[in-house]
Image: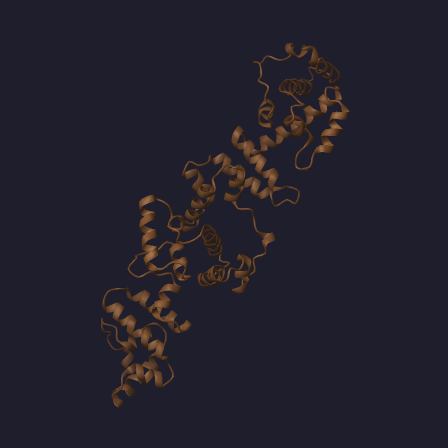
Length: 399
């Protein structure tokens, strides 16, 4: 008779829970029960003496039995934790912690599981943070920072680890060990990943959506962290959440994604990305239109130069003074007020008239030369302009 196949007791006997946790086989259980009956010994002692389980396995099984009988844990989770304890030879308490399971707390968000498993925050701290999170509406990570239970840098590390787990580049236990290394031994993030066998070359990392917007001054660091945590917790994209919480328009999100991709090009720097983002935000225009308008400004400068409105010495001095290669001569001339709005407006009108075939190139140059004599008024039908000469104002003219 196969004793292991008898009807199970609702109390879950020692042999049953070890069997269903996959720690022993049905044959081992049958043989162990027979020996235990003949020798009048507890089954756990027989299994230890036969070498099929360790004393820690039996101890964990006994603790798990009590938890099941007390209704403190459901059977499925109990078996998973017991199996984990057996494989890693840790206590049930350690199995709880290493799997990010808090006792008496209820379901934990991913952030809570990670900091609990890494031993950064205990059950009591998590309970306080979860109450704070519920009261303020902040995600758990932000609540942990507010209560000084973790540092902001630790929150960054946790978010980055969760992103790697989401992308299947890291297991939960690897993330736990990496976080412990960062916290306890003060190693770098990359070094911590290498210590758990994960190589993530820095040069391959894409500039994060939130970092782009924060550096451009369009999103606060605090809001960026909150959105990032909500995204990792709910498997939602950063841009999607920005729109959902009315922090950005869909058009601006789309433009930011485009610039994020453009940053992969060797000659496209972060400084240029930040400037474009600021201009797009202030002007509310698509990226393609903005880039086209930059091209128009270059054409206007070329026309003004040909007409002698901007002399060659000014062009040479301006070009020589540019320390950031990302800035074009047109941008610098505009920022320094060497190209006024009147010049820009007239130059734009002339460009359009040349394209339409209404005005010849020579005639356009003649009109531009007459700027100082105010002859351009017969071509311009627009209100008076103020004296400001910001780049975005002139781009608006080109629009």
